[in-house]
Image (cartoon, rainbow, N blue to C red; front, side, top):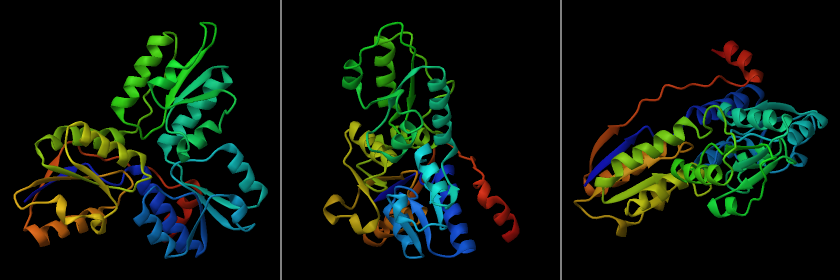
Length: 313
């Protein structure tokens, strides 16, 4: 068996920043640290922090007044920020800067009286937060069929934005359909789909085609991990989205197989390595890492934690 390991893979800069933020908050303030929604969409990461005193909540009503709450990498709406203030919570905002960029674009377009078509997945934490910036101005579409149901005349100022973790190909198809139906529609100055999402999808496209099977490390509720698995299947490859080696099934594998492994942007490297070890111990697999692109992006910690980080450095 040969394992081909994709690079880049796993944690992106936004996830790294959010995870570091929660690590530092737990160390400095002590548990419990409340986290609004999952810090990132990965069960291994969430369970690891739960065991150390992080408390994940879906409503700020679950957070005692005067407590510390951390907003996840996916961002929150202004209503949630205001509720945190009303409850006298120390709020640490670990929103990914690339998500914040989409929020700011939504605010700008809304102030200029645009109707905003947001391309994304209904119910995703990031989409909920973005729509909360200007709910009266945003219409959500998930696919080209949704676009075909829209009705605007040329007097309507239109703009589109996208969730940061979409399939690049899917998003481009939807954008093309929007431009076909509404040629006057405006987009962001720089595309919204994040660099890490694009790079991981590019690696799958370039590297999976010669493989017999694809393993994507990531959780079922991770949008970008789901897209990687779907992309491999589009190339006709058996592909499985797994949290770690406990999800592997012996019937997927045979001795002389070429297995391609990648990881979504919220999957830690430890689960990648434990999966590789599972295959090596059973099939004497060799390992080759293929580097498609180097990533050197780093995001600073939230303002509330920067001085604490300097003091503890």
